[in-house]
Length: 556
Image 1: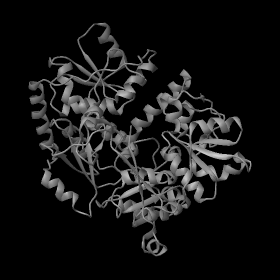
Image 2 (image 1 turned 180 degrees about the horizontal axis):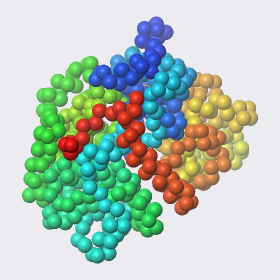
Image 3 (image 1 turned 135 degrees about the horizontal axis):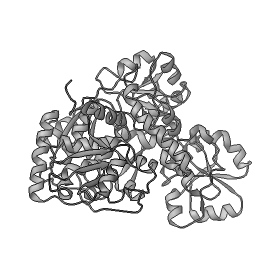
Image 4 (image 1 turned 180 degrees about the vertical axis):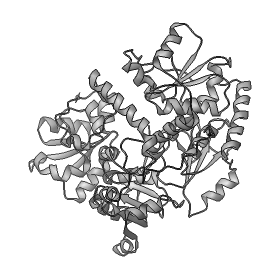
């Protein structure tokens, strides 16, 4: 279980707030700031579903009502240059003083928000984890990463050709669905473990994912790492498999193979060559202490081994990130552009893989670190530090038992604030969904003047923050202890109806796999694949430029 630590910030006086730098900047000024090689956190304070529909390329999602939960992880240094963006400036003007109360001191607001950005001719993007996905498309385009179609793969399988299929996604995603006969080896693990699955260098290796990006990145990872086998990505991944009319398997888990001493030696040798090629330096214990003591730079520390290895023992204060996901969804872990990022492993292979890709993304100063006889290790999951607004009031938790009793008495209204996607899949029976920023507008109609609002979220942490902010607004609200996770685990009543989604489609964002109707799902698959392929052209437009440097790029 993840440990939550409340870091309630000391009260900030009006004098302190007045001393904080909050100013408006133009779209042109923001464009220049994105190119000036100085640390910058571009924070989009709208709700996640709205963000996914339209945002600036390097913006990081940290919605107003979730800032206390997200900002400390994404932007740990309090004097980092922050630029806040929303649709038109209204939410940003509310978020700026909140960030000031949380201790941030250099805050700007994009004048006229996204409307001003677009009015000045700058490009906007839809989707999630866009920079990382754009890199995958550019890699295939520039490096010529070889691929195989579903039809070609099935023909080779039916011919009983000796080949190895590896799925580069996370174990959780692989468990949900996978290709028949595939092994689950997350992308960052591939150079470390692939020789156990394909020891004969003549054995072809096919890398797949759910769509395109991780298939391409996984295949190119093996090529860049010097693995001698014939390597291809599965074109359009499991989407193409389903579009071609074939079934996927469900509920599978595969055990990651441990490399033999000889295979580990080979992998380390190639990892060293990779680091030399891409120019990533190793950093010693002393060097690490030195950069951590430099107060004017942000440093992110990531242990990218498997979750089980991290839990068994990791360096104090280091965060865990599945290596492949740190490449695939960098904006979910790192909110500060041009920051320093240190990647650690214990084997000398996996950190090199991840570091090489982060360098190719082009927005970070990257190092690798290999611990040598650390004096002490921490075990278990990393604690999540929540910054709490000192201006918010206290509130009371409510237990599952109390919720059940008060539901019978029609004395409460339950509001789920997690996400439209999670709500559509499963939620507490009779719960409404509302984006947190809309609760104050809907509260009078839901409470009828006599009901109490009960706020719930995945684990109750976000609900805690929302209830505190509502109390500050004079709205009586309680947070469900244990959240949805605890409710589901207890086997209490649930449903999947979307009838009580009061925020509607405006705040909704669904992935292509979220659709159950086959025809609609296939339409969404094709739209998604077309969108990914189109990113190569889109990042060439004004406001969309990305400083990618593809390691395997062919020289024309």
